[in-house]
Image 1 (tube, rainbow, N blue to C red):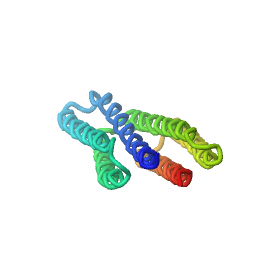
Image 2: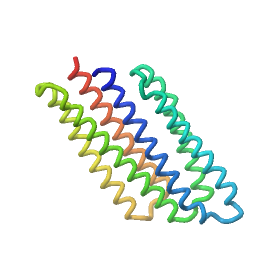
Image 3: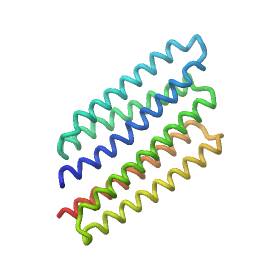
Image 4: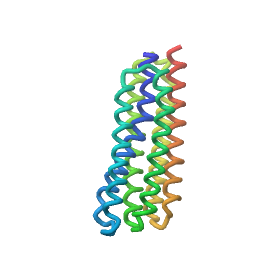
Length: 200
C-alpha cells in the first residue's frame, strides 16, 4: 500500500494539470475560428504545438503509471517544467490571439471547471482509500479528505465569483488559478503525509 498509495498523490497532481491542459485546448480550439483571418494560420500552428505539449505530458503520465515513488518524484520535476512551459505558451496565445473578452472568459471558465473536477475526484479517491485502514488510523486521513473537499468548495466559489465578475484581466484570472492550484497541491501533500503516518 505504501508505494502504491504514494503514487496516487503524484497521479492526482499530474491529472489535475492534464485536465487543465485539456480544458484549455478545448476552449482555445473552440474559439480559433474567431481569430482574424490573417492570424488564423499562425494561431493554428500555436494550437498544434500546445496539443503536442499536452500529448507529451499525457504520455509521460502513462509511462509513470506503474513507477514507484522515487521515479514519480523525478518525473514530477520534469513534468512541472513542461507544465510551466505550457502555461507560458497559453499566455502568449491569449495575448496574441485572444483579444476577445469571450475567449479569455471561456478559457478561464473551462480551466476552473477542470481544476475543481480534479479536486473532487482526488478527494473521492482518497476517501475510498482511507477505508482500507483500521478505524484508529483512518481519522487523520478522513480529516485531510474533508479539508480537501472544503478547500475545493472554497476554490470553486472563488473561481465562480471571478468568472461572474467578468472584468478581470487575464493575468488576474491566471493568478487565481495558480493560487487555487497551489492550495490543491498543499492539500494533496498533506493527505500524502497523513497516509504515510497511517501506514507506519
